[in-house]
Amino acid sequence: MEVILEIEKYELGELGDVARELAGVLPEVGVLAVHGEMGVGKTTLVKELCREFGVVDEVSSPTFGLVNVYKAGERVINHVDLYRLKNAEEAETAGVFELFYSNALTIVEWPERIADELPLEMMLLKIDLCENFNHDSSRRLVLSRT
Figure 1: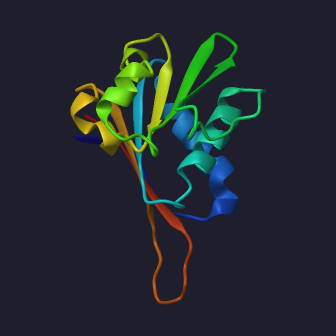
Figure 2: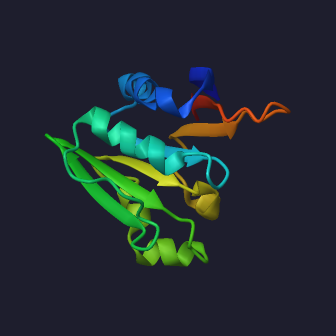
């Protein structure tokens, strides 16, 4: 894997800057798999990214509907949240796999639920908490390409 962007430590107050940096290196079309524990800020980062891309609609978690689609000018952003998925068949029935080959940027939260079905070529965004004995709540972010 090729590392494209690494941010060693950022606070939630710096999320706008982080989203701006990410937006500058993400493709208009492709798949971005977002990995991170529950509560690490995946959806919050996606909201900031969409704002950075110019989405004017309210961006919300697609946990119950699986997929939200946003437009920013000519750009299309598919936001997929697979947290409640029981198996890959549910994703297929919902049309998730078709999104991987659409003319859009498809951002997938909880991609490990369908790991065997993800495209070979995609971008992987890993977000980790940097908690330590001082109760630090900063995050670490690594963006790579497969």
